[in-house]
Image (tube, rainbow, N blue to C red):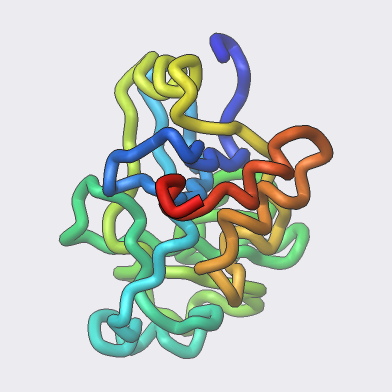
Length: 184
């Protein structure tokens, strides 16, 4: 994976990855460079409504309108992703890649107009330089292309299977892997 750009791609946990922080997760890579990798888990909604922690932003949040577990790092802080129309650069939004960017949650919500989707994450997932590449080489992650709706899926609990199922190779078969192989 050395030299391969991961920003904007998905990391899909392989069935062999048993770390409870990442079992059956789908992570959107937000930044990958010589300093390491930053991403958010896009398929772990919590029961906590966004209104309970960031009420002014609730009207912008995509369904389900709950806080998501972004990862095991800095879980006491919030990070928000939003997609904007092509060519838009609203105040309070910073482009990551394409039409996806970070929302400044300290900015007044009324500055952000025309959002197509927004999701709020508690924490994030992070790797030091070379760490993620090592985990990929060791068989912990599949790296696949993201589709525009993946970060804002209305059915995040089925995202792991759906992302794998749409692959055009043997990865599509992994979608049928049982939750507990002992029960097979």
